[in-house]
Image (tube, rainbow, N blue to C red; front, side, top):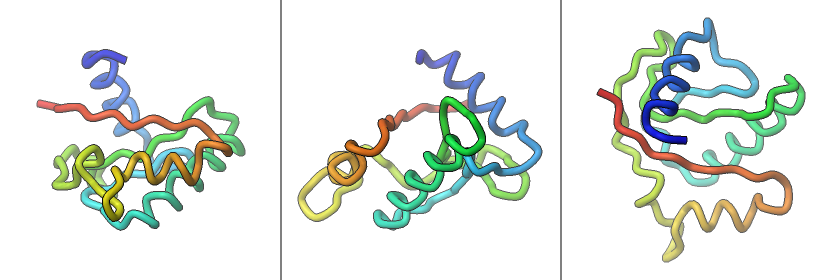
Length: 106
């Protein structure tokens, strides 16, 4: 996806009336095992809800769905000496595909 498509998707997700089994908003969650649990739960939620994708979105206020930004950088996070994304992929790849994307939203 390119930046305009990502922005449109973000606004569509924020327009949802509430979080769903396939959609979770977080401001700064950074506990690595918790992130893995969310990825797994959202994958299951998307399947149960008959959605092609599930979303864990950082930088969004939970109650209002306002875009606030985040201090968490998924791409810079490490688990030990390993990139967090690689560590999580090692634990989840055989079960379901997932992808991380960074974007700036003005």
